[in-house]
Image (cartoon, rainbow, N blue to C red):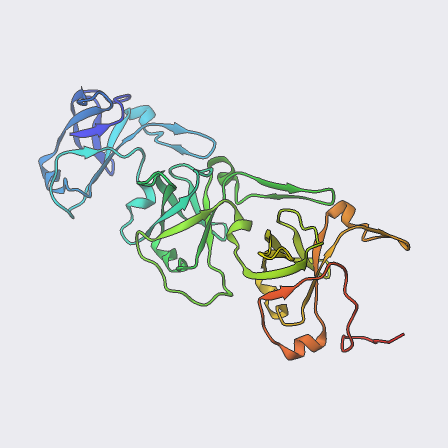
Length: 359
């Protein structure tokens, strides 16, 4: 007996059970479940395949599917719907099954990696949504649902065995579905993983190369599912303390090094003694050589003074945190992660590259 959500497309003595296109049985009876929330389908299986009815065997209904992202089951237009059978000799013998909602696809692999991703809410994905690594499909989503305590949404993914070694304890996963659009008066940025992910959703992952090597993971390991790439790219965390008079707003202000964005302010808070503004930031790995004692940070925003208006470009692009470093700091090479920021552009100190004069 196989339990289906409904009996649509299944007919007694007409719907066959097929394994790799070969008939191995047929439907003999349809009946409602005890509480009438499902349909019990009784099938008669060829005696030769009965030893393969184990707890690891699977059944699902194959019917034509036509959408923007998938075309499948077209053979059923001629032969009619059928119940697919995936036998297994492993596990204990049983005669009652719950039908899968769709073909198991990659989740049927024996040597791949199955992981659980946790999110506050269900992102833009569905069963069968792809899992990407560097925009290459390496797996798929095979299930999702609420956690036992109802606090999270759990997304179950399968990664092919050839790519399982790419997942480590510090790997980041993020939702790659739909479009992400960010814009200001200076530019417009649109991010998308692929056309399939726009239509069907998806998950992408990567392991930061600049972090220390961590062990690979095993089946059932759990990871956080970030909402987007920017959130997942944790990068190198640093803290910058600014004077209380600095206005940083909420967060997400860019950090720029000679015009190039090398990080973002992720959160802003006030110190316990209400004397400083504490900014938690994330910088890109290529900026790691510049995270040294003596590196300077200051806020850049339009200012009106006796000599006119300065930093007019921020009227269009928005304010940002500037970062700079000099040769003396580089030569000392004292790595730190906690910095003191300034309210305005600093005076170039003696020892900087170039000519310094005292007037």
